[in-house]
Amino acid sequence: MDIFRAVINLLVLLLLTEVPLTRAEPLTLGVSVGAAFAISAFFGAYQYTKCKVYECCEKPWLIRNFTEMRTMLNQRLYGQHLAMQTVVQAVKSHFDNESPHKALVLSFHGWTGSGKNYVASIIAQHLYAKGMDSSYVHLFISSLHFPHSDDVDNYKRQLRSWIIGNVTACERSLFIFDELDKMDVGVMDAIKPFIDHYPQLNGVDFRKSIFIFLSNTGGNDITRRTLEYFQAGKPRDKISLHEMEEIITVSAYNEEGGLRFSQLISSHLIDHFVPFLPLERQHVMLCIRDYLKLKGYEPTDDRIKLIADSLQYFPKSTQIYSAAGCKRIANKAELIVQAQMDDEQEADLFRDEF
Image (cartoon, rainbow, N blue to C red; front, side):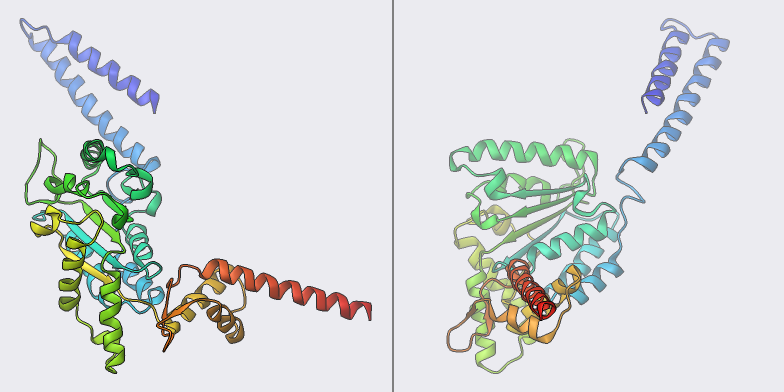
């Protein structure tokens, strides 16, 4: 790649030395035009070659695989009909639009382990060839990147700079903000200009970018409404997005966290509030089955039930919802499967001795 740059620099030097500032003779002008064409052709070849090796903000690095995205969520996302109804279509509509009115903003709300991070990673995986490892996917974790309450103004300046720099590099950038419930009030207002209805700011167009917020705020109210449906004998898939968005908007605006009293809400700049409902025991057992298959363990009914029984559920009267969703499955499964394998080895040794 250094050779490419060196040749470009040489061609530029030739161009500058062949074109005097005072006058341009026909022969000199012809040489300069030829040099200009050479530079243009070489730069095009350089870009083409570079993007074959290094990630660029274009195909094949931007993949837009919405069919596979929908299939993956259908197969692996459990108990979240509202997320299924909203997320893929919202992202597809935004990506298919070459001139969107504003950046797409999705705000995922619900208790831990309900699938918020999983869905965000699936989005990245099917928009970018390198998934979450793409240079155009940017993950911010509140407790890591914005930990100190007395540095809010500094965080806001840094955040503006990060977003401007990254969108300048790729207008199809994806920004994921995790643990928004742990963020100090006011930090997120720094991104307001970038998700508003401006064609460009200082020559940069932010309207093709995507912002995803992940937060536990509203989780209690989402769970309360879901439990009301259960107690009334209504299927959870009858819960509507409209009623949940009203609940989440009020909760997010008033509860402690990065969206409290935020201009992003009061100015209606968040396009979709997506609720993640508490997972029932049946959903957790499906997560356990998937994990066992992924790790190459036999997903027997007894093994799945044993792992499911090791988790905590609520309310006490019915024990229907998992307190941590699917989040603790990996550690519990490894502990139980390893114990079973050790028992089997001891049994085999005992049989060999006799």
